Image (cartoon, rainbow, N blue to C red):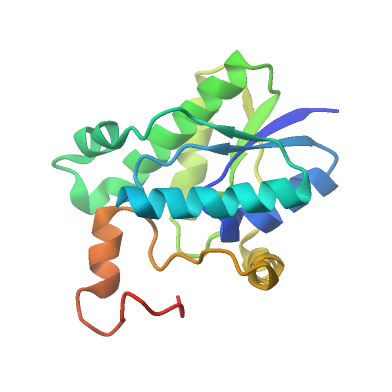
Amino acid sequence: MSKLLVHCCCVHCSAYTLKYWRDSGYQVTAFWYNPNIHPFTEHQSRLAALTTLTDKEDIPLEIHPGYDLERYFRAIVGHESDRCPICYQIRLQTVAEYACQNGYDAFTSSLLISPQQQHDKIIEVAREIERSSEVGFKYADLRKRYSDSRRITKPMDLYRQQYCGCLFSERERYKDGSMDPKSTEA
């Protein structure tokens, strides 16, 4: 059975993604590395939710040590309006390196299920990393299954984030005052 390392950005994107790859015959391990998520309390809330899911579903979870927030901010300085591809590269490169160092056959990301992400950019970045590493990239377009992922997690009453994760996406989410930061309707 091939070993697949699945980068997990949040529990709601990860639930169906992990299920899909496991049901497809892979030995799945979830991997947490998201230095873009700000503030730290948000990072920890998302990690706690993912930990609950992986424990419940008996899926191994590897957590990259440290928060690495400085790495993220250094990389995007001067590129704030085009930060997402840089963020994808930071995270997926780390995932691929870990996969290569720890005997995984391939890597993928739960980012690929989200209709809010730059899908083509994620694929482009992942393919570039695949070409320069010793580990493959597994792709599946799971965007039509996004609501299935939410249905898996909703009965678990897990933390539900209100923005992509970075400080800039949080500002974009709340800047016009139309969304109360305490609302759970994202």
